[in-house]
Amino acid sequence: MSHLHAGSDLALEKLRDLGIDVSRETCDQLEALVYTLERWQKAINLVGKATLAEVWTRHVLDSAQLLPLLPREADSLVDLGSGSGFPGLVIAALRPQLEITLIEVDARKSAFLSEAGRQMRLKKQPKVIVSRIEATPPLNADIITARALAPLAQLLAWAAPHRSASAICLFHKGKGWQLELAEAMKDWDIQSQSFSSVTDRDAVLLRVAQFSAKGLRDR
Image (tube, rainbow, N blue to C red; front, side, top):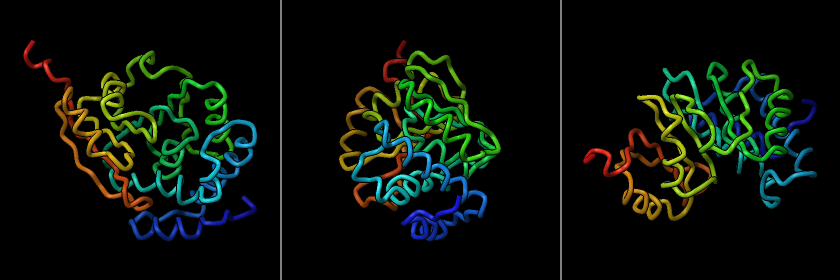
């Protein structure tokens, strides 16, 4: 990429603070993602217009902060409702050995995801599935992610068929996440940890290690 987007230096510095060292090649890939996003944003609404000026912190850094929480031994990741590629395409650049699948029902957003992956010249191109999450055949993933998609109870229902036996879920959650967790626990037994977000003091990264629908054990 010929240009370095405003805000990228700050985002990369914050990543280094998290122990994430971004190579020149990876930085180029992330710049290609941002460049492609800005081009496509003119035609389809991929991210909130107000956040576009701060895309490196609001979206790239926000996605990349998941990296220290990803199990080293994981082989596969499924990103639910990938939309604009956050966090799926960011993780694809930072963890190139992962087999990544992006599920997105909107055909235009799916086209963007495929094009952005090509422009990024990723070592492993993520698989893009154009489908509703609940209509997608089980994927047996080690990691399941979702960002700004749905309440926790719904995310767990969508994630359940796609997880491997030892899978973890990592969900970006904003203000009110504790209420969401309490609501979800009415229907699910959940083992979870929360980690403070570096981009929003009211937000967390919610790591769900195990979950099961209540009542299943009684049947």
